[in-house]
Every structure is written in C-alpha cells, then in structure tokens.
Amino acid sequence: MGSKSIITNEYAEFISELKADIGRTRVRAALAVNRELVLLYWRIGNGILAKQKDFGWGAKVVQQISLDLRLEFPEMKGFSRTNLLYMRSFAENYPDYEFVQQAAGQIPWFHNCVILDKVKDAPTREFYIRKTIENGWSRNVLEIQIESGLHLRQGNAITNFDLTLPKPQSDLAQQLLKSPYNFDFLGLGDEAHERDIEAAMMRHIRDYLLELGVGFAFVRSQYRLEVDGEEFFIDQLFYHLKLRRYFVLELKAGKFKPEYLGKLNFYLSAIDDLLREEGDNLSVGLILCRGESKTVAEYALRDMTKPIGISSYELTKILPENLRGNLPTIEEIEAELKTVKVRK
Image 1 (cartoon, rainbow, N blue to C red):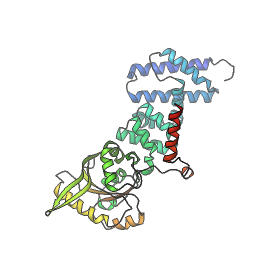
Image 2 (cartoon, rainbow, N blue to C red):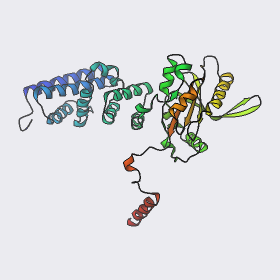
Image 3 (cartoon, rainbow, N blue to C red):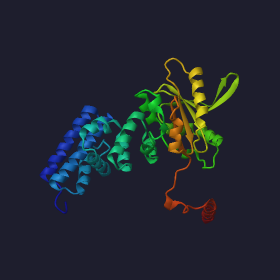
Image 4 (cartoon, helix red, strand yellow):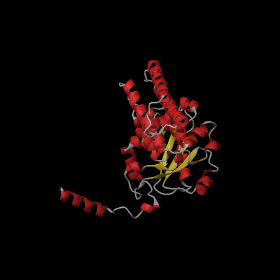
C-alpha cells in the first residue's frame, strides 16, 4: 500500500464489520466452543482475502488489522499478525465454508495450523482432519502421524479381508492396518531379534499402541494356550473394541514365509474356541515381518478361510540416498564430545 494512508473509508468499514462480527460471536459462544472460534477465524481470513483482492491492500494491512482488533478486544488472544496470516491461509486453502463447518471446524484451531504447515495438498489435509476427529489426537500425536506419513501407510497391509469378512467389517479392518509400521521409537537397530523387539514393545507399550491405532486393547504378550495337553504361546494378543474381535499378532524378524500362515491359522481356531464369547466376532490374524513379497503373500493368502493380514515394519527411519554415508560415525561423535568437554 506504499506511503498512502492505510486508513481509508473501505478499511474503516471493514474493521467495523470485523469488530461487530467478533462481538456477536463472543456473546453467542464466548469463544469457548471450538467450532465457533474456527468458523470466526475462517470468516476473518476470508474477509482479508476478499478486501485485498477488491481494493489491492498489501501485506501491511494485516499488521494494522492486528493492532485494531487487539485494541478493541484486549482480553482476547489470537489476533496477532502471525495468527491473522494463518486465518488468511486457512480461508484460502479451505474456500468451501460447508467443509469448514463439517470437518475443519471440528478440530482445535492449532491442529488446523499444524496441518496447514506440514501438509501441502488438499486430499491429504482432509485425511488428517478426519483422522483427528475420529481418534481424538492431541497436537503432538497429530504431528507424529503426519511426520510418519500415516496417509501413505494406512490400509496398505496385504489381506484376504474382502473374502473372509462381511461388509463393512472388511473395509474397517483393512483401513485399520498399516504397512509399514514404524517402530523407530523402540531404539533398536535392524539386527534386532524377535525377542528383543517384543521386549522393547512392552517397554514402550504406549507408543506401540499409538502406532497400532485407535481401538486396540493389549491383552498379553506370549499368551499361553493349552490344547490337548500341549502348550503354545502367541506372540501378542489384542482385542479391538470397535470391531469386537481378538487380534492374534505374530512377530517375525525376517521376511514373510508362507509357512507362517499354518501356525497363525491354528492360533485363530484355538482363540475362537477357547476365548471368544457371545457378541465377539471371529478373530483376525496379523503377521508383522521385516518385509514381504506382495506376490508371495497374496498366493499364500488366496485359499485361507480365516481373516489374516500381512504387514511389514521398520525399526529405523530410512535415510534419503543423498545422506547415506555422510553421517558421522560413533567414534567421530565421541571425539567431538571430548573436544566440547575440553573447551569448557
């Protein structure tokens, strides 16, 4: 807007409208209802966009709006220049007010800011908005899910659910499973054995359940079964509260092998006979392995009559090619730490 005075008739009228809108919203909802707050922010952002387009207002107008709104509503937070820019971006990226009402308005404002910052395309933003509503994620959990690329992993397990489970249970179960699962929080290297991985999972059970997804209730590790006088031990047993069925999880430190299915099929039959009660659905099996051939896994599952999924997992985050070999060794890090101590 250059050196020209920012206080024009159009601007004064716009500020007056904003103040009236904020006042009405504060009286109606006291800005305590999150949905009303998010919708208000959308209207402010949309108004800024429209006025900048209609009257050619430059970037400096946002700072002026911030000063005027904070002067009018000194007890209210949220009218900083930075937050007004978020409002403008919010309205620009979600032009459909109905979508804001039904989806984005259902999650806290700063959750929306995280999604705006970290996710660049509209379908993926909508994915994380709806998952936040569904799972009740905190802001920190939302950031973890975005950084781990949940939208690329959700529903990717190889399963036979479409042949062994009725609709819509088959779709729900499919979307429940991921591939690969990200277990980098265990702090283990790729050389870890099954017992090491399982023990670390139990030490980090909260993070483990978060990665598995909402609805999983942990029953026991190394769950003991007795069949015809013989003992058998299931790696991990879960119950899913929404699907109302047991999940038998078998953990493998190597790649998937077709022979794993026979043992898991036996466990599912035993759990259904010995544990399942009235109201419980048939149990589901999940094999977690270090990797799998899609073709081998699909062949192995083709004639199985029990619902089984096959997923891979990662113990460490995969580094981009251009970083491999460029990281310091343990010896180099230790040497640098000694140098730092000497400098003190």
